[in-house]
Image 1 (spheres, one colour):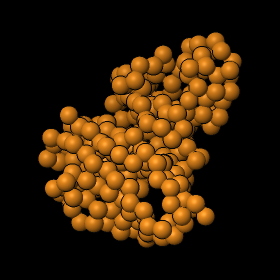
Image 2: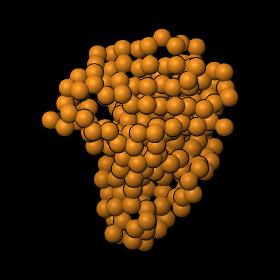
Image 3: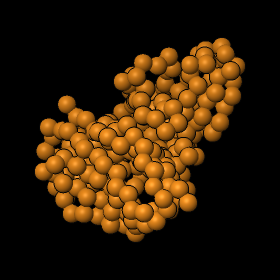
Length: 111
Length: 116
């Protein structure tokens, strides 16, 4: 049973739309992460948070934004989706230095 | 700087063959963790193993085994008697000493294809 949940699993949306990808975890982890990944390719860190009201940009420049108002919730928002945003988005959480737990991912297609 | 190298981009073997996935890492930390994750075609990342830098014992779990060698900075993963269900992309990752580095450094992944 998953302890970190991402919704939606799949999303097809038109160019210019605003979208929010949801990520929630029930483990009380303080550290959470968003990765962007084309299928089977390298993982690119786009945002991370080490606690409530703490967010940072990752290594890969992204037009998305994140918020961390509650420990368990770390949503990612695209204000205006473009075809270049088509990818898989993976959310993860971690406690201490003991590795990540990943959600199932959201596969986004922008048409 | 920390770095993880998975030199094998893609490996293709016939079912029941043994296969080894290579992982070489670089770090200046004396305490660190190494990980392997599996990503099947469905896309989720599945944790397989964590090994800390003080534990060089080899690990075996069913058909999976891991060989950690600090002398060569390698953490290789072997699947014995491979099965079609083992087909996936496998990622090796590294983290710094506990409490000081909260991000994993990822290899580029190795795509493993098991043919029936």
